[in-house]
Image (cartoon, rainbow, N blue to C red):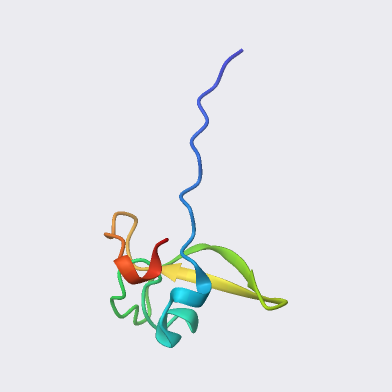
Length: 68
């Protein structure tokens, strides 16, 4: 039995995100304000702490500052 597997998109480098993106106030991918909506991208560990990254929409365009 063969199945399709899709690789999870790479998460942005936490240290390269703005403070607002790190605190889940802005989208971690495009930098847009999240407000009361958003989706979880995933959890990252930075300096021993776990942070949850959030994005605005499933198809939002990556922002160069938050990508490697």
